[in-house]
Length: 118
Image (cartoon, rainbow, N blue to C red; front, top):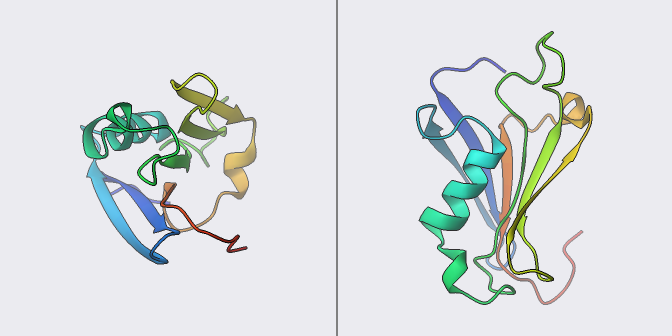
């Protein structure tokens, strides 16, 4: 993916079954952890809501250097608010960003569905 000065995120709302793409400037968001902080703390303010709120987002993404020859930048990162501790958590999977090809840098899943959609 060629970077043109923005970090692209695909938002999926499973409650309304809608999706949209939002671009963030690179001076604000450099990767999935920055995006997770932006979504949780600035856009949805999930710290003010119950942990099972439909606004509690799951952010899955890769950094802007994934796919290059740099060592250690190919990790897939998930950011979420934990139902156990109610805190913001980050988890990574080594090398998984190689296969993360959705024509966006991150996937943000929000909303609540009464039944499984997959």
